[in-house]
Image (cartoon, rainbow, N blue to C red; front, top):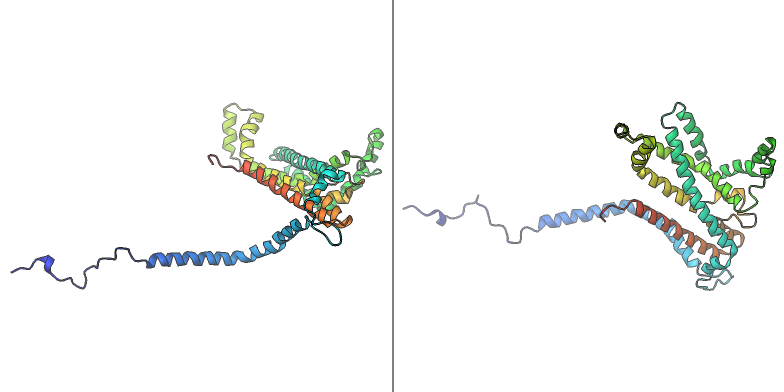
Length: 318
């Protein structure tokens, strides 16, 4: 008599029904591997984080703390007295004005000049020589640039001597003696140096533009200006963001060129916030006021950079 297959005992090779909840060991092993990878990554990052905390964050926190104390020997807590100095001290008011002039000049001039020179030297016969002449000042330090321009801009300097020799002595003047002319000529000196890196970046952007797009625009009847406006400029937007961002930060923290040329003078007429910070801390011996200027300058730099990059790099639809 045959036995039903359902009544046969289970053999050794038959499958066992897995537990209802499943085997938890693979999930635990995956979680442990993830924790180990995070710990490994954290171990590699720890030295960099420690260095940033020790040499950047800790001094900044101490600067904020010091800005709320007076400059007397006992250094009592003075609340916002060091910050209200911005509204009452004419030198700091002029420093803010100069800083704004520097920001505008150091953003506009390198951008416009760098883009123009890059476009003019992109495919010319003497492009390499022209690029070398423009980029060479960027290899100099700010102090070296200041020495060169000091030779040119002093009362008996090269500029006045050239003007006198060609009969234009009425235009000769003390270029570094009156405001705002002294600030403007220093901005020109800074642009002479800073234009080099803008030219390099714009040349990289121009050479990355596919020639087919320009040929297609030409076939559609677009002139040179229309091609530049509607084809070249939009494709240079990533490079433009970098150039403007670098120029913005450099303009806000300009120090070495101003210090070598005028030391913030005459009087304190050409000081920017960076120069005022140094002057208040080390020359006037008011570390609380200098700390307040440093905090204000840092907030301005971070806010300007964040607002600019947030606007330029904002993803559509977010």
